[in-house]
Image (cartoon, rainbow, N blue to C red; front, top):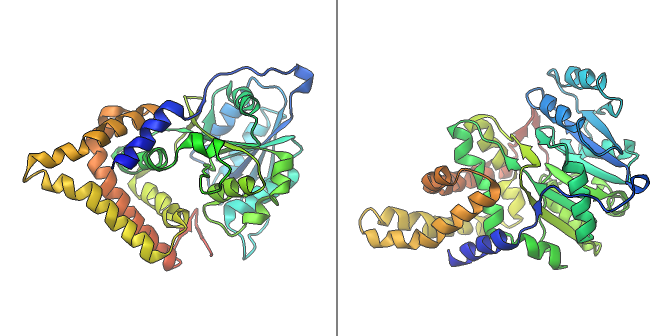
Length: 358
């Protein structure tokens, strides 16, 4: 618990923030950015995403959306926004090859179409404030990195989302020191989130495009490792409000979305994974149960309470709600993690109507 708390304290003090910044370059020297959006059955969120993008105050960019064989109104919505902005175009995704995951295949096609000096891979449920592109480039320039990944502020709806989605920020901020990911060359400290990855074109080509990670479910983490293996720097950062995302809608979608990547992201053998989860249960859940019989056990949670409050502030989430739900968050994580192991080993992961192959 002390280890987890210390990392969260360290992140609160040192984690890079994506906030409003200005670029120190002439207008003629602004790099051309290709915003690349894979979209499969995204009719519920892509309208807000595209509306936010076409209002960027950065002048030098294009937007390419890959309609990945959607069977809803995604393509119609994209075409509507194409009439509003000549910066936006759509490509129709080709059939998915057997040895690719769907998102990687869509991103590969987008990268082949892009003309930019830098590529911004963006999920279709993400929204950007007008200053986002300028601010992200300015932060890349200041830190002199080849890849920047921004962890959005997660927008939450009902109780089902509150029970699961905050786990993403809690886990990353409790176990991964963002500043050390930037400073250290080792790939053991690598993290990124596929919702927002800004990467220089030459670095993307050097890593072998998405073809190099075509079978990987947790493609964002693997992309970070690949870039580091090349000797380049990466920068994970937290959004201060410039980047927001509504990942899932409701409890079932939240659980399925988390379970899709939890075990794959751990990259460890099943036995070690199970022992790790049992250890978490012993450390975080058992003292909570024992506190009902002896109040002294509640003091075990004192450093975690401060840690959870700090991680909530850094994530721009409601501190009180997260503290109240904290025991439930841990229990839900353990349940989701075991479910993730079950569907992964059983090859039962289905997302956006597709069975994910390994």
